[in-house]
Length: 135
Image 1 (tube, rainbow, N blue to C red):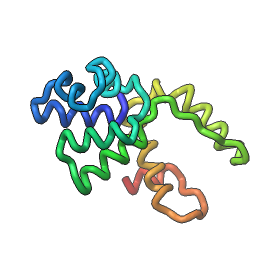
Image 2 (image 1 turned 180 degrees about the vertical axis):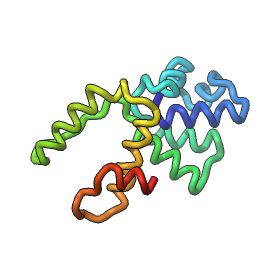
Image 3 (image 1 turned 90 degrees about the vertical axis):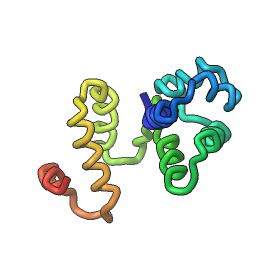
């Protein structure tokens, strides 16, 4: 399941809406919408995303969040490490091989490390224990 698919399914169920009715409103098949919710389809097109926002009457911050989730919901990610540090290539390849075997806690820890790195300016690496202590 992708972050976008999970959120769409959650919104639909919270509102007691049927998948087939939503699919008809969006002009897609029930099978496609179900696959999108399960993460078996790539990230939605801009047009489909706008239709989902309209269908749920979502505006402002919630629309920004759903748009962000859609952008981060490609289940077949490719990482270009050409020209990066060899450790970046090692990390990308190991993550590709091992991601399905990580526990929910391990995934949360890794996301916290990335969130921390995204929020800082380029500086010396922070030891993993230091990042975990701030989370």
